[in-house]
Image (tube, rainbow, N blue to C red; front, side, top):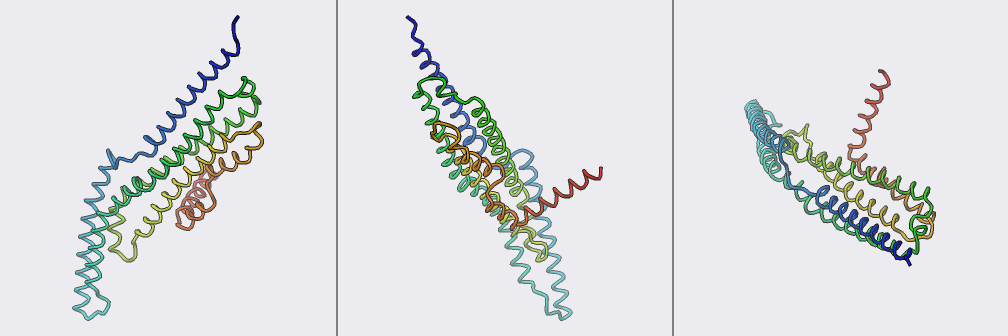
Length: 280
């Protein structure tokens, strides 16, 4: 006689194997594609080389112009001329021209990748453990019970994952642009009025903290999703809360962004865009 219990168990095991494979593919994508860093290449590398050449030429021109101006000032008896300060500033700019790209590489390789690999590993363990618990269910009703609730949960999951991937790509693109523009930022040290080095450091720190906290928020969301409960309601607050952290970001990270000036700039750009759209 045909045994339906064996058939149900085999189907559940097959679904479990499929889901585990999908989880492993997703985790490999996060670790090997999303958070991998191999340095600049293609157009980005060409743009960086151009900025290095242009920045070096600009450094020599600005430093030479300031030295000549200060020599003339000293000849006229000016007390404000300080050639040594210009020489030190030029030396500092030359050093930063070499150091700043390595800073981005160290941030990506030494800070972001270890933290994200650790949190992503935890996410993979939680998801695989949750999938394997499907086999312990007695029937399909236990696994797929509450169809509408499950649909809402997976809709939330898709939205959160989409926001997570999009925001991570944006943050990495920002760090990439910081590396490309680092030669021009380094040269700005020579000028006391238009030095952007502090803004550059704040930008690097802001994007680094955002990526790490965003990955941690995603790990918390996965933990809430895989939390064992008889119904969806006990874990719903944790799902909504951690999902909101991924979508909008923690308030502390927002304050870091706005204190660095990046958030205010983005907000002003958004207001200007909305104003132009409303006028049309």
